[in-house]
Image 1 (tube, rainbow, N blue to C red):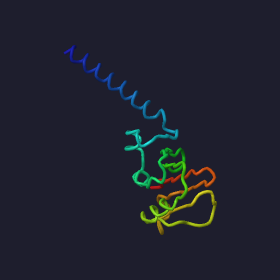
Image 2: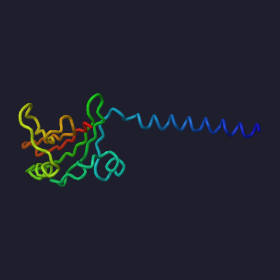
Image 3: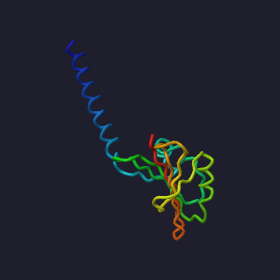
Length: 141
């Protein structure tokens, strides 16, 4: 009986320690943005929003960013370098059912679904001087 009790206590302590380690691992980067490429299997397949993952590759040089949303909506982005046109990205957003909203700040194009209110939206920014384009999906659901 004493031997069984000893093993049960040892098992409980082990599970507790593993739980603490898992929590520390998960919480260690909870408020940080994560930059990764398509070759980073875990991040690409488990962190990237499906609409960002399916976005057309308008340049060979691109990477992804994930923002956890510390007090605001989380978002995913794909950033391209060496871009000459963002028309394929605009066409992709139209294909998804989004329309461009005009007005407000002109730093980036705002794309939202009509009559959706506070649902998911996209921001499309293109810097013609640097050739860098960024498509960001803000997750408001």
